[in-house]
Length: 174
Figure 1 (tube, rainbow, N blue to C red):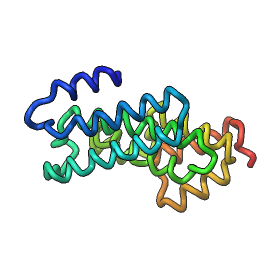
Figure 2: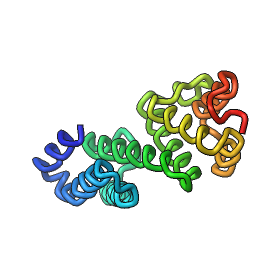
Figure 3: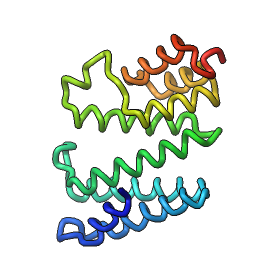
Figure 4: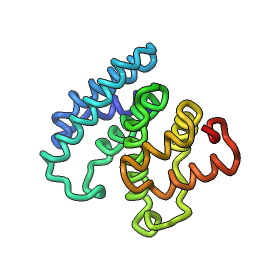
């Protein structure tokens, strides 16, 4: 998948003239992740997302439907990679939950406004996996406290935390 994104970015067109910088950070992040250098991978993913945000501001994108598909895919892939790294690191509980919230917002926008208001919303499997990892490492109480520190929990995360408690998943009692 990342090779396809890199190839599409390399072919580029006039609208993607600045994309090689973003592509380079994405590829660096994937390589560092595969080489098990999480600090470099985290920095590269953060830089990639930062570059993407700058590009979207420069393009004056006002809604998610106006985002060019390749930029959306790179943002999604970078955010998923960052979520995976944060959920593996002991000191990144809050950061992982913030990225999970961003991913859930992107998911809601892709599904439409009716889905975003659904109180029984389900999270994508990557987000659920990260939440389960976080609960296993830090305990349910710590994850709930960190989530409240960020703001109102997304319905999908709230549902996942309730299911973790109901099913007594590892970490539910801490």
